[in-house]
Length: 113
Length: 113
Image (tube, rainbow over all chains, first blue to last red; front, side):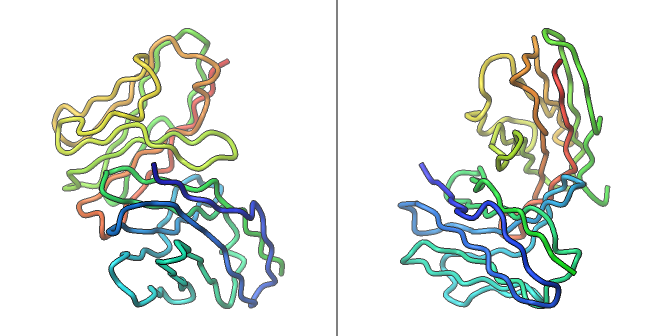
């Protein structure tokens, strides 16, 4: 079974600085999707960025970018120019051949003014 | 609708009672998912619908849990004889294509007392 590991339960960053959230996963599949979701106190999971495994180019969405290392099964999220509104729980998720998303345990990001 | 709507937002019930949780997906999304998120954990898959049928219910923890989607739109998650261990946030998500990501609702926080 696939697993997703987020080894850092909490991180903090100063406003306007850059922070990197780590995620590793375990799978024997070659085709899959990886996602980062943000969950503020409102509970809604908000899609931050997604990566298709067959694409070698790292995905970027404005201030958010990923470092996808397929061989190492690593999928880290970089947040540049951190803003107070970035404070939330962040979840890494995997989707392979089955329809289910497999989530990590999450990481709490605090942004200090 | 514009987003995934879940009702009620919060539900408190007594141990042994029956509860229904409702999910109204984005119009036109054929795929619908239920997840359960316990405190301090990432969401865990419960069931997936493609249209009206449950294509994968492997995540349902036992036969007290059941879900339906009779017209291929709104879905109801039903829990019989609730137990304190069922307390969690129940999230619903829908999508038209996995490559575009999943849109989540704000969840129902179920508390069994």
